[in-house]
Structures are given as structure tokens and as C-alpha cells.
Image 1 (cartoon, rainbow, N blue to C red):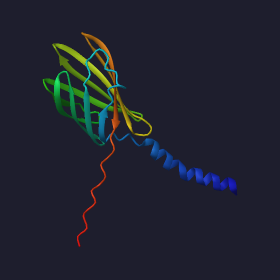
Image 2: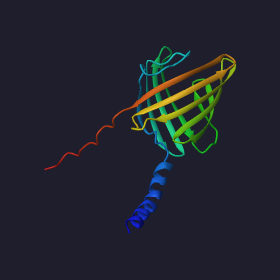
Image 3: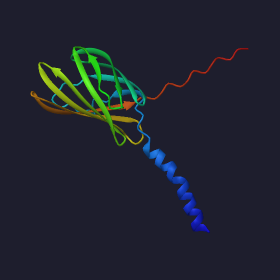
Image 4: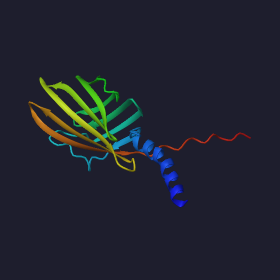
Length: 168
């Protein structure tokens, strides 16, 4: 009798566990760059960066504000996770990207031209188990050489909802 109850409990739990395991990461939130934990490789990194990501699969929008040696930059990147190529314009760069899921990580393959050189970039977005750290690992390859970056973004706490004032 106990064996049968355990078997029934396991059979009931399997679809729930399976559904949970198939859920993809949700990158939504406000993320701030941790410069000290990041490694920009051979490329100069920003002094500060904030990403506001809105993720409603298959759509991802990333509003970025960064400041550094090149001044203040503000841009929006729009992606889709359905494998279709998207083009984003960041300053003079037209960046062509495709995205795919690898497990719970998002892999972005991008191509663009920089100083008359074709550049290939592969980025992997990975959330920490607690969902508070977004690590973006990037590998750049071109005729100019190769370099890697590891960008560490930390999720910012959401502002509490405003409580309506009571009227007498």
C-alpha cells in the first residue's frame, strides 16, 4: 500500500518537475554593472552601465545607459529568441544577431563591421541560481584579433509599489 502511494506521488510530481525544468530564464529587471567583478579583456570597459531588460519570450528589449571614456551612450537593443535574425543600430554599427537557448542560457551570435573589419561576437547570458547576477560572457573574433569579456550585472531591487493615500 505504501509503495503504491509513493508510486502515485512520484507519477503526479513528474509533470510538475518537468514543467519547472523546462522554464527558461527570465532576464527582466534593472541591472547595474559591477566594474570590479567584470573583465573587459583587451577592450576598454565603461565606468558605469545600467541595463533595463524587458523579457517576454520570445521578445527581449534591453535599454542600456553607459558612461566611460567614450562619453555617455544610450541605446536600445531588441532581440527575439525564435532564431530569426534581428538588426540593431548602435551608433554607426549595424549589428545582425540571432539568439538561441542552450539549456537555461541565452546564446547570441552577432556580426558587424568595425573599422573595415568583419567582427563575429558570441555572447552567453547566464543567470545565477538566485537570479540576482547576470553574467554576460562574450568572445569577439576578427582579423584584428580575438578577445573575451565577462560582464557582471547585478539585479537592483524593485521599488515598492506606492500606497494610495487614504481620503477622510
